[in-house]
Structure formats: C-alpha cells, structure tokens
Image 1 (cartoon, chains in turn blue, brown):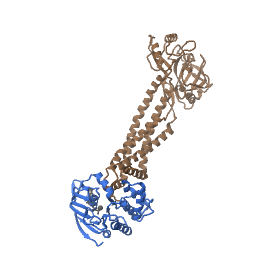
Image 2 (cartoon, each protein chain N blue to C red):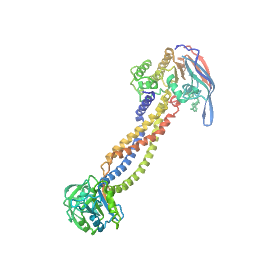
Image 3 (tube, chains in turn blue, red):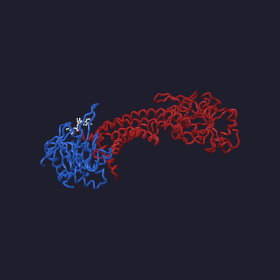
Image 4 (cartoon, rainbow over the protein chains, first blue to last red):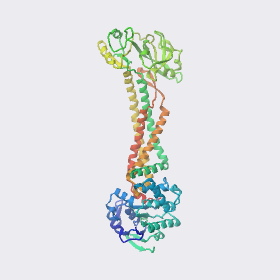
Length: 235
Length: 400
Ligand SMILES: Nc1ncnc2c1ncn2[C@@H]1O[C@H](COP(=O)(O)OP(=O)(O)OP(=O)(O)O)[C@@H](O)[C@H]1O
Ligand SMILES: [Mg+2]
C-alpha cells in the first residue's frame, strides 16, 4: 500500500440525503451530499456545532443509515448492507477512535485493545503478540495490565487508538479524538495519527473543532449548511 | 474457539466485573429471589416433613380393618360379632397365623386426651391408643427405648418419643390422670420419626374401662402374609355380609391422611410463593433494565467495534441468571439453617396433635431453587433483548 494519496476514490458519497425528525418536524442535515476521499488520505472535518459532522462520521461508520443516496467504501456499499453485514464489515475494515475513549473500565489496557481481535480467527497467542505490538506503537509498552481508570486522558486515548488499529483496518474514523485532552496530550495523539497515516498508510477521517488539530491532516473539509468547502493544508 | 464464543466470554466477564457499580440494586434482586426461595422451601419442607411422618408410619404388610363406612379410625366401628366371625375363619384369607393356627390380631381404639404442657402451659390433644398385647408387634420399626410395654389389663402406658420430649410429666415412672383413672408410665418407644411417636399406648381393656367405651373396637390390625395378600383378605372379608368393611394396608391408610394435609400445605404455599415470584420477576426486570442503561456506552461501543447482538444478549442474561443463582444459594442456605429439622406439630388423625420435623430434602431444594432460577431467566430475558437493540450511536455520541 502506498503512503501517498492515490486518485482512486476510496470513500464515495453520492447524492446522500439525511435528516431527522424531532417531534413532527423534519429537519434536513444533508440534502445532496457528494464526497470523495482517496485511499491514504488524512482528512479533517470542521464546521459549526450542529452542522452534521458526527452524523457524517456515523454514516461512514455504518451505525447510521442515509435516507437516500450511495455510500461506498472500497468495494463495499454500506447503504445496501443490513445491520449485521455492516457490523461484520466494520469489524474487519474500520477502526473508531472516540472522543471519550470509550474504554471498558473493568478490562485492562491489553484486554481493551484485544477486543477487535476477538472478532477475527486469531489464536490467543497471536492476539497477545499483536496487542503488545500496537501498545508499543502508541508508546504504552509495559502498561498492558493497567486499568484505564488509572491512566491520564492522553494515555487512555492512546489505548483507544491502539484498539482502533489492533485488527489492522485500512480506515480510521475519529470523532473529536482530542476534544477532551490538554494541548500536550492532544499533540501526542495527533502525532500518532499522523504517523499512522504517513507510515502505515491508514486512511483517516477526523472530526475536530480545533484548527491546530486540523493542521495535522493532509487537508481540511469545512462543513456548513449541508455543504463542503475545502482548503488544502501544506502538510 | 469460535469468535462468537470469545465475544460472549469477554462481554460476560466485563459485565460481571462491572457489577460492583450496581451493587445496591443487584443485591436487592438477589435478596428478593432469596426471599421467594425461602418461602417456598419453608412450605415444601413442611409438607415433606409431614409426609415423612405419616408415610413411614404405615407398613404395607399390615392390614387395617375399619367398619362403619369410614376410611379412617375416627368414627370407625367394628362390631364384636364381625370380629368373632373373622377369628373363626379357616383357610387362606391372606393373613398370617400363629403356630396354633390362630390369626394374629390386634383390636384397637383411639381416644383423644387433653394434656397441658408444663413448660408452655399449652393444652394439647394427644392420642391414647388402647390395643391388644399383639399391637406393638403389628407395627414395623417400633423400638422400645426404655422400660416395657403395658401389661395386660393394667393401668399402664408407654409414650412415643415425640410426646416424651414435649411432656416431662410423662417421664417414665410418673403417674398421670387420663380419663377417670391414674396411669403409670412404664416405657418409651421410638418409630423413626413417624406419626406413632405422637401416640400414647395402653392396654385395650384398661383404656376402654377408663373412658367408658366397653366393648368398642374401632380398628382391627392383622399381619398380612405378603405385600400382595391384601386382595385375598379383602375377598375373604367380602363374604361377611352384615357390615361393610373397609380393608386397607396401613401404608395406604396413612398415605391417604398425609396426602390431604400435605396438599393443603402446598396449596397454601405455592400461590404465595408464585405471587412473590411474580413480584421478584418485576424487580429483576427493573434491576436488569437499569443494568443495561448503566452499560449503554460499553455495549454500544463493542457493538460498534463489530460485536454481535448475541453477545450483548447473553452477557446481560447471564448477569440476571448469576444474580438469581446467588439469591437461590442464599435462600437455600437460610432456609436450611432456619427450617431443616425444625420441630413442628399439627392436628393429625384422630384429632390428636402430630409432631413432625421440617425436611429440606433434595426435592424441596431443587423445586425452590428452580423457581428462584426462573425469576432470573424470565426477568432477565427482556432486558437482555433490549441490550441488543441499543442504538450504536450511543457510543459515538456518548458524553463522558
Ligand atoms: N438522533 C437524532 N435525532 C434527532 N436529531 C439529531 C439526532 N442526531 C443528531 N441530530 C441533530 O442533527 C444535527 C447534526 O448533529 P451532529 O451531531 O451531526 O452535529 P455535529 O456537527 O457533530 O455537532 P457538534 O460539533 O456539536 O458535535 C444537530 O442539529 C442535531 O441536533
Ligand atoms: Mg459531533
């Protein structure tokens, strides 16, 4: 896999429509959204609160469905899949990094990281090796048996990232991954994501409010009133 | 190991480990299950103890002949003429005979006597049974623990172990007034906890004289030749046309008595336990719904990672079942400590008090345990289902 973005669109949104009903009133978030993200890209999505950033990411993750339109990632048409098919697809092709880490507090760091590996036909020994590798990659070697509650926010988010990449997915989705972190921890986490993109060729879509965070991405998409405006960053 | 199994295992483990977060409501569920188990175990062990007391009293090779159209000793009357006819019968009538060819028979009568317990001051009705000297031998499992049986025609009594324990005034050597005369206690007997231990035995004629019941016989006991001989005896006695006789084995006589009372105990106990179980199930439902809502982000997170609905279901269900099992365990332990071997007494046959021990046997524990388990299985199913229906966006939109 190349560490440079290629021209083949990896993620494709075509004519995507999405709205919510609140009470009897229908509100439209996206009316006719198109989006192309090539493989190996690192995209930051910014925009005012309520503009639909999380909704976009949730549709990419396949946990929310569009009302109409096509969503394709690689060869997979998420909009045509059922719930369990999307779930299985997610397990093999995508890692999610959450704003609040979403670690299971009663499991150790290693056990949290192991979770996505349980979905694959991997032996216990291979799992242990893989967990050690990714924890090492995020700078948490030796903390396998520590519980998340005893870690700093930055460390917890690094466990979160290790979990997201444990099963070696091509795509990483991050919703405000640094939203709950101080500047220093945020920069560590962002450097990590950058490394994953540059060195391991992961395609990353990151929602953020923080312009400094967006600077780590290859490009930034601004979302407002259901439309994108793009600005390219010198990476 | 399959992936599905791994998912269930880790989810269940994480779930059970998170129980301390919900310790209060989890404990309340276990406690309400324990309460249901206790109540049912209490009633069932009472019924079981009562049955044991009566069932073990009856021998299948002793026939009891009753007259007057009744199937219990109270109200029964076997006329003297009938007894003479039976005793005169020759040939095989299904009953064992002595060396001289005579039938081994005990004529018996039971009179209720009132006795005040010296310790509690409670007055109880006791059964005083008058019998021929053959009487004790016509019962299985009777052991004379001290003294001797009453002498022929003597104003002497022997008391069953349960009565001896409850009434110090009936200790050996004591003189007691029953009916119009004073009696001397000459012995004590045991019968393995059966209903006989709640009786006082004396000589037939002495008892009849003291209670002005001369010539009366309520029942006739005969030793059968074997377990199947009751039919032969019935056929033989059917030829005596002047009185309808009821011929039953002693085992059947007591079983019929115990069935009524034991069923009554169960009839009272089951609805109460089921009603409580219904309440406990509602409580379990509530506990588990709050467990699911407590774990919403965790469940949605692993589901977003790709974990199956099945694993979310099982993990929640197992929690409910585990809490129910804990409740069952506590309930059975508590009822064992409280009830097993507990002495109880009730009014038995012949309107006399009957002592028995509550018995927590395997069947009682299994039944009460299964009801407790059912609370978890039923009460946990719906919350487990709702755990599979949580929107996955709960993970991504989670706020701290
Ligand atoms: N399940 C839902 N039901 C109804 N309305 C919803 C639902 N989810 C999101 N919305 C609405 O859709 C709009 C877009 O929400 P979304 O969370 O995507 O915004 P966002 O850009 O991520 O905002 P923020 O920066 O605050 O996270 C908001 O107005 C929100 O209230
Ligand atoms: Mg958002």
